[in-house]
Every structure is written in structure tokens, then in C-alpha cells.
Image (tube, rainbow, N blue to C red; front, top):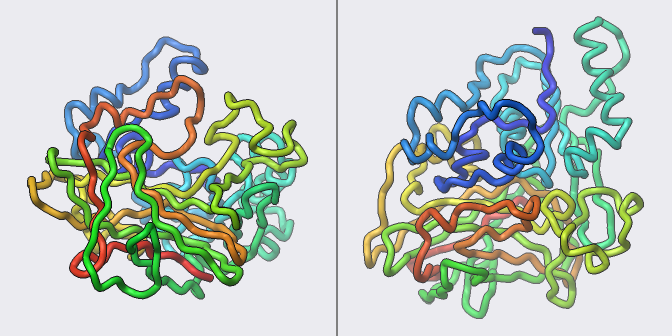
Length: 389
């Protein structure tokens, strides 16, 4: 093999697809197997393998790529819209040896649209392989930026994309803490007084925290939430965090995953509710963590903003225990104008739109019950750490 091009990659089936954050979710996989792929049904039973071992074992460990073994030119794409593949692609780029010629392009569009409806993407892929497989001097190496990012605008604005950079995450990134505070606030200054809010772990109940920008702001890279939480009445909890964008009137915004010029509707409100899908609309950037899987191995973390959870054992939560949870959030790129707000949502249920009607995200079967409590201020410095550029 002379070169590879992982076009929207998954590099760890446990952490990036089936057991993200320590909670099983077959998501779109079962829907595809049941309705789209024709064959004799001989596929791996990931449900059963999770039932046999909820924590890491040899089966799951074998499904994580060791990037140190790759020594050939690699052209990687990712997108914010296909979050199953987002972090697998980005981890690949970050952990490939520096001696390997490598490129990363974070696409502005949903992966199927990019693959089938963007001839420039196909042309670029062909140029990569022409150079490395046919030794054609076509300018690919000289003319192609090593990294290209995308910045979502939301609403009726198409994203900004093909933004050339030299590395990822961006070297000029400034990581700043937004501390959770009273009255649903996010604050750049630490909060001295301890407080808490609670929400039911089932259904759509959510604890939210907001910060309104007074100047135009760009966030690109790896966000992370550090939350101090408890779950009275239970010994475990799965926590979902999501970063949303609010307009100047405080309404949550969405981004279309294809160009508006190719859409039949002219706004989100005009679209048929059956089309309100993660495949078509991006609502935000999400992270997941099960409290009993909160252990972090800093030596194996690909970046301080994206903690590595070994998932090797379960550490249950005591009845009166408040636990610290470091939750890596999938890579983001978004612009905020003056008067617009960023919102951190904390919930016990899957917060994004479904991929297809009938897809059942199985966190309901995985133990959340009762109330979740978010503690902040004083001895519990819960915060959202954001990548400002």
C-alpha cells in the first residue's frame, strides 16, 4: 500500500461509535444493517459484545487503530455533521507520526453530500492518489494546505470553509474558562459561592448556562467541559453536554449541512419535521460521559482538551458523592457575532436530532434515573473550556 485517504474515519469502535463515553448506543448502525444492507445478516453483534463486557477488553481494544504503525501518505477528511467520524478523523491526524505526509480537511457539508455532490472533492482525492500512486507531478503536495478548517455561521448563512492552517489544533488557540454560575450564567471570572441546579435525568429536562458575546468571536478546535455532579437516588449517570448557538433574541440556532442553494426549503422552519435530522441539520457540538467511567489517563490523552478514558473498570457514585467529570466535546468551529450567545446544555438524554425516524438511542436502557445535580462555584469549579482563535 502506497497511500490512504480515510474519508470520514472511525478509529475506535468503542469510544467513537458504540460505547461513546461508556454508554452503549448503536445509533445509525442498526438502522443501516436492518434497512439498507442486503446479505445473509452475518455481522458482528455489538449489542452482545457490550452485554458481555461493558468495560474495555481484548475485543474492544483490538478495534482501536494504532496510528504509530502508519508510515504512508494520508489524506483525512472530517466534518462536524457526522460526529461518529469526527474525532476518529481528527485523532488520526493528530497521532500520525510527524514524519508521515498528512493532510486534514474538515468539510463544511454532510459527508454523503460531500462525497456524491461535490466534484471538487472527488478531483482533489484523485489528485492525491495520482501523485502518490502514479508519480504524477500535479502540484498536490505544494498547493494543498496541510490543514483546512470550517467555521459554521448557523441560520441562513453558509459556513466558511477551506480556511488554510498549518496544524490542528491551531497553534494560536487561547483556551479560556467559562465558569458555571447562578441564574443560568457562564462567567469568565471564577464563582466564589457554591450552588447547584438539578434536572430530571429522563426526558427532555436540561440545565442550561449562557454567555452573551459583546464582540465578534471565533471558536475553533477542541472544547471541554469539567463538571462536578451528583445523582442522589442512583449509583451512576450518563451525562450529555452540548454547545449551542443562540441568536440575539436568545433562540437556539441550527446549521444546514448542505448549501442553502441546494435546499428545497428556505429556512429550518419551512422544512418538513420528518427532515429534522442530524444528517441535514447541525444543532451543536456534543460530548458524553458515564460517571462510572470518569477515570482519565493523562498520558494517553491526545490533547489536554480531549481526555482519554481507559474504560477499564466501573467506579460507581456514592449516595452523597459529588464527582468530577472531564468531558471531551467533539471538535467545533463556529462564529458568534456581538449579541449572540453560547449555551452549555447538560442533560441525561441524547440532545441532538435523530439521524432517521425509528433510530432509538439506547441510553434509556442504560441506567439513568432520578435527578442529576450540577454543582458549581467555590469548591466545585465547573466550567466550559473553549478554544478562542
